[in-house]
Image (cartoon, rainbow, N blue to C red; front, side, top):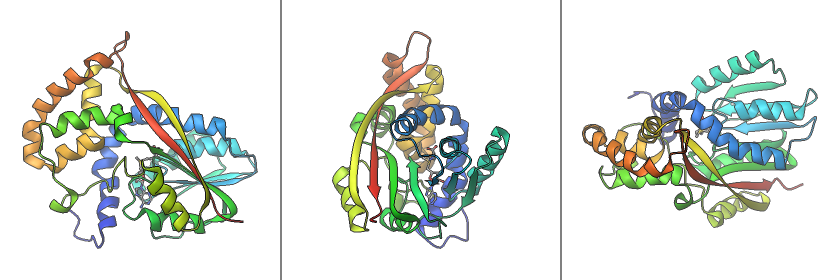
Length: 293
Ligand SMILES: C[S@@+](CC[C@H](N)C(=O)[O-])C[C@H]1O[C@@H](n2cnc3c(N)ncnc32)[C@H](O)[C@@H]1O
């Protein structure tokens, strides 16, 4: 544990730079492919116009930032921001390898640091659900937008409509005692993947900090959660609510992992397709809001 932490957000940033970075990187192929099913659909419905500037919030590996850069063309520019410098190192290397030069990445805490701009638009794919203080972060995002600028967030809808994460969470909760963030000193992911699932809360929050014309579009699609059942089980054990429950339960979590593994094998057996890959449903909101003109 770092001795230099000063706020609860430092704990989250440390987690994204260490344990979560390692776990997410291990399963990068599944995340990028699965998450892209949602973001590709949004970018197809609402492509960013040529010549515009777009900020990608909590950009992770930056694959969406690079796609946005391609969409805005040489006269436009895409910027990716993440609090974890490990991700930004990968973003820079990938953009250089792809030969995309209208893209820039930088490290900043979206809750508290200057985001530059003003941008024509801001975008976040699963990048806002882990903010400790989402209202503060979104206020900062609004500050970085031009008048009339559009802010789009892709966030998970309710857990019951996201069996790709929730089935494993239910199995695990039946076996491993849940340790809350307040009861542990361990680093953690922040509020979690379903923190922005409620449209009333999200629209109230966006409007209270000055955004207008808030809209929600639902999108449902199956996601591949493993190229085979063993990978699907390891993926579930490592990431999302299941990964956090096991990790935060420390020795007890480790001791009970074989039992959870067995329960997950059973749970996923009816999700295996003919080629052996494992698929489960996912459901997101495309949340849009505008900075007033
Ligand atoms: C679930 S990942 C999503 C990454 C990427 N958008 C994607 O779709 O693959 C959430 C990202 O948000 C970043 N993040 C969390 N809190 C943040 C903060 N306060 N400021 C900036 N980035 C943050 C994390 O480092 C992580 O890369």
